[in-house]
Length: 280
Image (cartoon, rainbow, N blue to C red; front, side):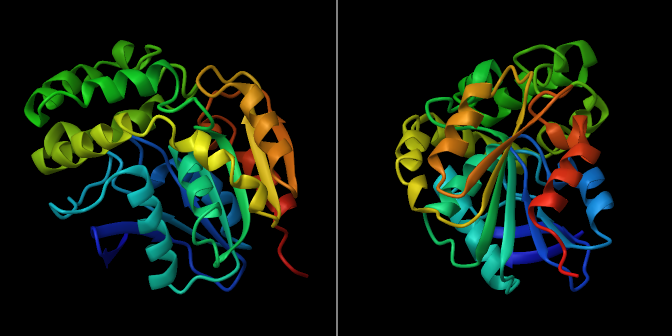
């Protein structure tokens, strides 16, 4: 992975390179850019795929002590990332809490964004989302050392597969979720960052309701991709988001939970390719 020094600290990212249309792919809480590995492998022949590892709990490089790790702060970091890499006409894609970040960019500084894709994500009053999000935010009230002890139980697969962990987020991605936990289990500075992010999230429960009120101003093409069987992000929210967006449309995906990039990567890649085709 390449590293770029941003105002909040160092951010690692993958970049498939090439001269094709730019896709920037954002992950969620307690995840990293590897969420998108299979999707990128499918799309990289025609697109330049860029995926940052944002400071949301699975990052490997600590942020500065004064970094704003609230969700709006991380959204501003995404905008800074696009600026620093000088990316234009971007298709900005987000899954899980990454989709919340996309929404914040859509209603904020979206000058570099040509299209947006929201994949089964936090929206409206579902923030923090479901049992998983609420349990994680509650654990963030612990001091970092105790938070680390709490997270140690996630080493055990049956615990990771419970509804309050990753069990309702992915059908097939347990090996990947186990890897995402390593930084917070082994690096005290990452635990500190994660607790700061979770505490900021706890104080922002109306954030996405307020954001939704502004989504009607995003008139560029927008695609909402939702897992039909999602148990964390209500399927009705997907239909509601698509209805709010002036140029929005909805695609529903079967046999998947929230993390569609893990459960149905080929289907998601085909849907993105149809939405943002490579020019002939």
